[in-house]
Length: 249
Ligand code: ADP
Image (cartoon, rainbow, N blue to C red):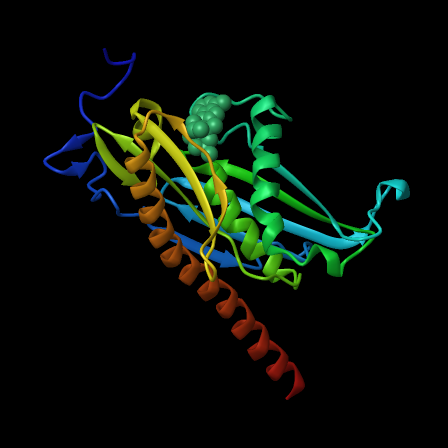
């Protein structure tokens, strides 16, 4: 039985409703350094999912007794703006945003040399300005760029994408109808250089083999995403270099 409002089919003649092939990502653009007041920041668009990430710190922990003598405390706040969804979304923290903030924190932590910044706090603020599925994965990809842009020492970036299944077809980077009416949603994040998995969640039904296949597809896509992350950072520093050189003339 189809759920209320479900499109008849999610795959038509081997193509998805937005014309993509199963393993094709939505158009992805990442820009580093978009928020001047933040130490590091990034804007990301993956299809119609849009994210802003800002990083502050390492800075003093208040109250002081919460400071860890061995490493930095990474605090992540994921928020979906009230105008980000078709129906006004209630502003402020929700169960969903608290859970997603934790998931993002766990995915980013292995990439950061937290032990290099004892007794400090690194704040990562993430705002979803437009939601069309895959907001947690887009948030991870953007936050990793913002952390690197802040000059925080990292082992690697973290690249992330959702895999899934709709109409019996395994696919990558679900958009809204696939996320709502498909059979499975599998957010994946990897440390691209080592291939280490930083996040793997699964909602829905998949066989063991399908999950394995999706993980492979996701890892491959993360290499593509990683290239865009590096490109965004390179571009930002090229612009800064030119500006400094001009100022010195
Ligand atoms: P993710 O965004 O990581 O896929 P969820 O599975 O929780 O996380 O959400 C799936 C999608 O459902 C979101 O990306 C968004 O497009 C949509 N969504 C989430 N919360 C709301 C909401 N309050 N109102 C409308 N759509 C929402």
